[in-house]
Length: 242
Image (tube, rainbow, N blue to C red; front, side, top):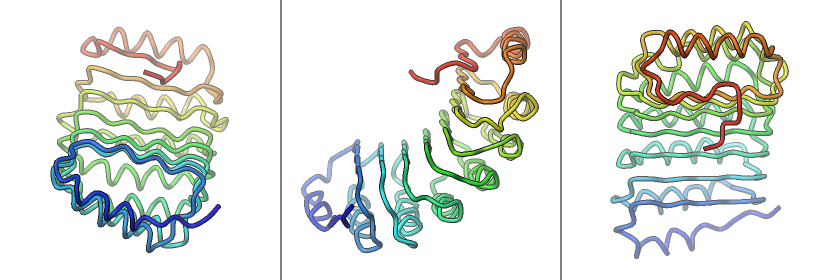
């Protein structure tokens, strides 16, 4: 694993001023603070950019680099769709909290996706993520995944207010598979909380390989069908793909 020099990226995007969508995928690299600043400076120069997808797989972050990256992304208030994918990186709870806190300013987002997998994180992190997402009042679509992160029922309780204040929200996608400490009680509290008063059209929830019983899953699927007819497309407790 070696540090990556993103100065060349910053120079290259100077000729891409009309770019509206960008997908960046980094695998097995070390991000140092200087490289994240180059990345951020390059991205902020793309004033016509509307959609950004950033994927970091098996990456190593120096202490301040991930927070620095969050601050730089937080200045991109011209973006309407932001997707962040973090897989098997040395991402500690306090660093993720700092990263998400820096994204509070992106209140004009219409779609937001945060997918984390194979990282050991504390339950309190989910509450900090909710604090940020509650400010995305214009969001029509939210996706949140924390697969194989060691979350428990406490983490699910911290997500109860996830959709509070999101009057425009129409599609919600959740995935917390391979978290064996998540059980019936936590999932019920979470699902009851996010459904209360919401007019969702699409809802997907994945809790595979968790401590959720088959009986609970079947009963809750029927509950959604009978009590929330406005949800035309619901896929509960199965694969979150699609």
